[in-house]
Length: 126
Image 1: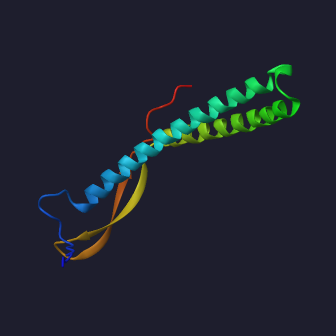
Image 2: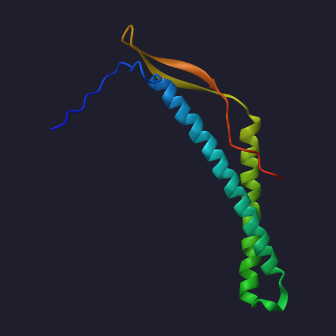
Image 3: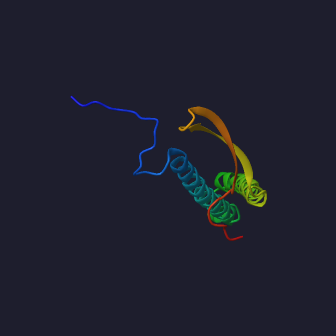
């Protein structure tokens, strides 16, 4: 039978938990930015495809052209909104956040205020 032990004291062989958590947060922010850029490209590509079908003339049935026309309008609007949101997030720069921490020397719990740099992954081509 195995036993699990939990210690609130950092291991000397690993980075402190707060540093590991911050690295995970930064990694998650970077991946979210990359994922958001992929979503934006997909919306723009789908809008382009819908526009092609909508303007495809008699080769496509009337109902299909109408669906494509509406999809084009909605996809373009969604892509534009997402682009504006991502640009705004890039422009606002750093933000201040609070992180709880345990001072292992004194045993007190406190808040650390720190400025984070927002990362949204690579900038997409316009």
